Every structure is written in C-alpha cells, then in structure tokens.
Image (cartoon, rainbow, N blue to C red):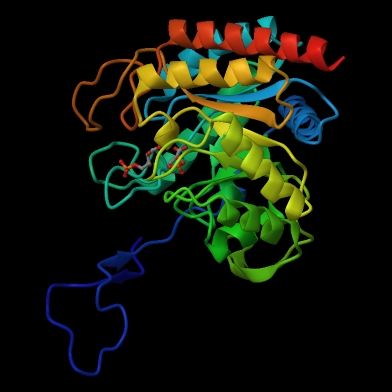
Length: 364
Ligand SMILES: O=C[C@H](O)[C@H](O)COP(=O)(O)O
Ligand SMILES: C=C(OP(=O)(O)O)C(=O)O
C-alpha cells in the first residue's frame, strides 16, 4: 500500500515538501520478518560463540587470523549457499589457525550510482522489491549459519540491521561512510565487533576516529523493532577496529603502512591490531592482484607481524566479475567487484594458515 503517491503535476508554490518524492510505501517491520524466520537457539549459540572468538583475536588473546572471505555481494542465494558449503570445509580444515567468517554483503555503497545490493533490488531489474530483499537476505544468512559458518556484513542503511543483525558475527562500516556520524552511532549500538575502513582517499585517522566514536555511548534517532521512530540510547561498542583497504593514492598494506596505523592506534589508546583488506584499493580491484596481496600479507604475518589480526578477501565460485542484471548470468560470478575463484581462495587460505603457524612459532 502506498502512503503517498506523487503525480507528474508540477508542485504548486505552497507545496514545500515531498517535491522530489515519487512514493512512500510501508515496509514489513523487523519483528514480522524475524518471527517468520527466527534465529533459534543453535544458530544463536554459533553467533555468540564466534563473536567471542573474533573479540579474542582482535584483543590478542587468540593468535589466529580472522579471515572475512566471500563474494563482494550476494546476488544469488543458491550460489551463496553453494559457496558456503565449500567454504565450511576449508574453515574446518584451518580451524586451529584461521577464524573464517563468510563475507555476506547485501548493501553496496556506490561511488555514484549502480546496483545497491540484494536488499535494495533483489531482481536486479530496478523494481526495488525491498520486502523480498529483506526476506531473501535473512533466509540465506540462516542457511549459511546452518552450514556452520559465522557471517560478516557491511551495515549501510541505518535501519536495516534491525532485520538481520542478530545473525551477524562481524560487521563493517565502509570507506564511504566511515566518517558518517549516523554510521558511527549505529556501530555504537551493534552487538558484534565492527571494523571501520579507512576513507577512500586513504585517510586512516577517520577510521580511528570512527572506532573511538562507536566505542562511546551515543543517543540518536532510530527505530524500534516494530519499525516505529525511536530515540536510541547506546552504551558504546567496545569491539571496534580499523580495516586498511588502500586509497586513491595507492595501497596501504605494506609493513610501514601497518606500523604507521598501529602507531596512530596506540596514540588513540586503542588496541594495536587491525584487519587488512586485500581487495579494493589494495589490489586496484584486480582479483589476480588480490591473491598476490594476500600472499604478501601472509609473508608479513609469517615474519611475526602481530599488528595484523584479520584479512578480508573477495572470493566467489568463478573468477572475475560480470554486469548485474535480470538476464542470464554466469553462475557463481560476482556482479560487483571482481573476486578470486574458489581454487585460488583455498590456496590463499592454506598460505594464511601456514603464516599463522610460523608467527606462532616465532613469537613463542
Ligand atoms: O565493493 C564494492 C565496490 O568497490 C563499492 O561498492 C564501490 O563500487 P563503485 O565504485 O563501482 O560504485
Ligand atoms: C564497498 C566495500 O569496500 P570499501 O568500503 O572499502 O570500498 C566492500 O567491502 O564491499
């Protein structure tokens, strides 16, 4: 049902609002969708346990690496579940060295315009069936938890976490929103560890500022589980960290970049550990380069670099990328940034796991 439907008649001189709004329609409230697809006790235990494990790695109490790995965006739930079943085998194989979290991104921040992800436009056909997108996202999240994997998401729309955040082990605030007060407030109330990306221009200090702001108590506009406008008051999220993703001037994953970032973290009184995103501006969005970057990061870990507590990888079943759209698509290939294929990903995971074992020996 549409609450407001504009027409094409030009606004009168006394109409001062909704001049550029075509329509406003209600969405199902979070309670309704959660009741349709409850998390349940077994999955909740996996989420709680894996959040604790991520916290332990970030705080240096667990010497593994958190590896957030999966497609740049989820567009096909069947392919995502297929990927999850294969990733679960690798996660189990490396469980002593790697804490594997499946990257499940449903909300894509765009530099200008483009497909904004499964929640916003699940048909990739500009019909913007957000209720369907929310249901699809929640159902595939539950499916991945059933495969035994914890999941990681970017949080972009300030009200979308109400629909899915109970299923999420680790979250990110992206490079385009890391300086946004709205997103820092949101992170202050989220229940899982949150990584702040450095800004697209490469500025790391804004991500550190984001971590500090999200660690503080905040009071802000939000919505309650029934979808009503609400005043939200948070205690602050103690589990925030920085993600180095490179910037317009180039990559920032080299040992001196990591040392500089760790110094800034120390100055800010934050834990001196961070995640390196091998994709985005660290690889120039090349999936081939991404595998090389991940191997270079592994070499730093093997050398004993204790500042690196996590790695992010963009990976899917088939290498590369294709344009999103409603027509026929290559099964298991990204419709946003180019991803490594599964075989390359498995090799990278082997390399990272071996690097963790070397670091463990070196620092023993
Ligand atoms: O991870 C995905 C993209 O890098 C990000 O959403 C920006 O994409 P765009 O520059 O193609 O809009
Ligand atoms: C958009 C993403 O990254 P960034 O915010 O670093 O561009 C992403 O990880 O999908």
